[in-house]
Length: 435
Image (cartoon, rainbow, N blue to C red):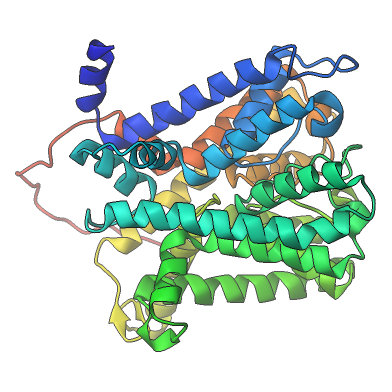
C-alpha cells in the first residue's frame, strides 16, 4: 500500500486522473457482472458490462443492453453511482469523502481537483469542492421533485420515485441512461412539456460548469460583473441552443419543443424524445456538429467544449476584421488559440480514426450511422441511430476507447505520458506559406 502511495505521489495529476477513470470503469464492469446485478431473465456478457460501465463513468449513455430489463435494482444503483462518479470526477468524489471524514487535503489532492475541474489557481479549492457537492445535491433533488409527478402517473409510487432519482442523476450529469425499459428513452414523454423542460434545465445547468454557476450566484445574476469565462460560456451556449433548435426544426419539422430538446440533449446529454434513426441526414449532421462541440469546461459534459469553439470562431472573425482576438472588452491569452486548435485537431483525429475502424468492422451500416455513433461516443453524448446493441465486440471496444478518450480528453491523454522540461534553446525562426 505504501509503495502504491509513493508511486502515485510521483505521478502528474493528469495521469492519476486518467488512471482513476480507468480503474473506476474496470471496477464498475465487475460490479455490473455480479449475479446480484443482473436479472435472471437477462444475459450480460463481459464486453457489454465493460461497455456499460465505460458509458456510465464517461457519462455517455450509449447502451449495449437495456438498463431496465437487464439489471436488477442493485445493478441500477451501481449504474447511477457510476454516472455520479463520472459526472463529478473521481478526484472530486475522493476529496469530498476526505472532507466528510474530517481529513486534511494535501497539496497533491488539491492539484488533482484543480486539474479535474480545470481551475487556474489553488485558491479556494476546498470551498470549490463543497460548492460542487452542494450545487449537485440541490439540482438533483430539485430534479427528483419536479419529475416525480410525471412518472408517478405511469408507475407505482416507489418505482416512480426511483425512476425520478435515476433520471435526475443522469440528466444533471449529462448522461443519457434511462430505466424506463424497452430502449424507448423518453419517447413516451414526447408530449410532456413539463418533463421536457425539467430535463433540459438539468442538462443545461450540468453542462455550463460549476465555476459558471458559482460566478452567476456570486455576481447576483448581473451579466456585466461576470468573468470573461462565464460570459463566453453563457453566450456560446445560448447561440448554440438557438441555432440547433432552428436548424433541427428546419431539417426535420419535429416541432419546436422536440427541436429545442434535442438541441439541448445533443450537447452531451443523450436523451431523446423522437427516434433518432428516423431523422434525415441533414438533421443527423446538425446533431453531429452539436455533439462534437459539446458542453463547457469544468462541467459534467464532454466534447471539444464551448470555449474552444468560441476561441476558434473569434480567430476566424479577427482574421477578416483585422482585430486582435478578444471579447467583452477583454483580450484573449496568447496561447488560447494554439490550445484550442490542438484540441480541435486531436478531436478530429480521434473521430476520424474511430469512424474508419467502425466502417471496416461494420460494413453493413451506413457511413452516417457510424460517424454519428463515434461522434456520440467522443462527445460523451449517448444519442444513437439504434445500432449500438447490434455492433460486434470489436466495434464496442472501439467505442469504449473513444468514450474514454472523450471523457478524459485527447489533449490530456497525449500529454500525460511525456514528461519533458521546456527547452531553453530555440531554433532560428523562418516563415512558411500557409493556406
